[in-house]
Image (cartoon, rainbow, N blue to C red; front, side, top):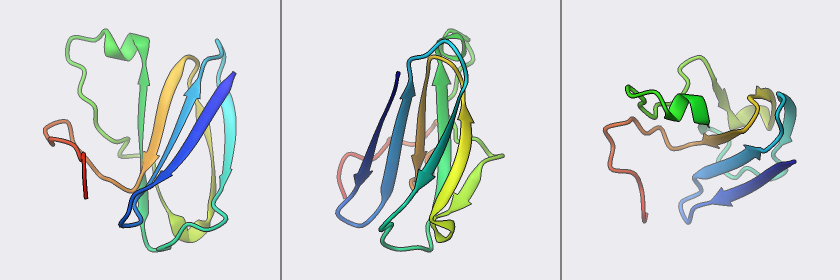
Length: 101
C-alpha cells in the first residue's frame, strides 16, 4: 500500500507526500502536469521507524537528492514503512516550520 498527496500553497510552493506502508522498497515515478513556477527545487525528507528511534535523529533534507521542477518528472526508490516528503521548502532541523504564508 502506497499513499500519496500533493499540496500547493497559496504562493505556489509544492509539497508531495508519499507513505509506503509495504515491508519492501518501492519505486515511484512522479509527473507534474502543472507545477506552476518551474524554477523551484524540490528537497526530499524521509523518515522510517528505525531512524526515528535513533537518539540523535534530526530531520534534514537529503543533501544527495534535489531536483528541479523544470524536469516535470522524477523517479525515486522509497524505503519500506517510510514517509517521504518532496517539497520546495528547504527547512533544517532548527527551523520553526511553516504554518502560514
